[in-house]
Length: 279
Image (tube, rainbow, N blue to C red; front, side, top):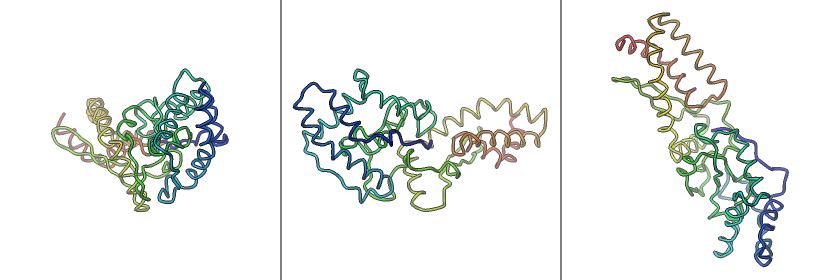
């Protein structure tokens, strides 16, 4: 997961909401929607105070069913829709904040915004930038409208959770007719974060996705590793794995690739034995 800067933190959420609302030509709809401007501002303020660590105390705002749909449509019709430039400018800039990569898996392209707290349940947050996470289509689909209302069981949030300086994704190699891999949560500093990491990995189906990437990398590099073993020897191959690990960790300690090469370095003797038996 990539740590991202909270977008448009210096722009009042109510102003963003009003710009989108005023894109409607129906003056009665505009008037009705703007009644919620203060609610939108309060929701945003409380979000920054309580989410994602204390949702149990996050004060939810009651919205009647008809108005809820109308509020949600502000996002669909005036924020994300390309034909309304004032709203879409926010959408595009939030998306660009991920630098092209999905903020969750770092594999797919960031092509859509996900509501961390679902817009159907929290309509006053539907255009609040801090609730909008740049994701790939796959991660967005896997999460769906998932929501937990219990502290310690919230998904990791790219704008608020920064685990970039600690290793929390790791892997072990499995040897049979092929070299396979299993990813796991190696974080242990506190039980709540351990739980939130595991829930995030499970909900987004990240470990199976990482394994697919790693197995492809192993397959593509197998011939090269065998040639290196024969040409430069076991000690140099070990050094090669270590160098690959270091270069990947400089970019991202917790990428699928960093975890793969940590495992290759850690289990290098086993890898070399397997390669020798499968030349």
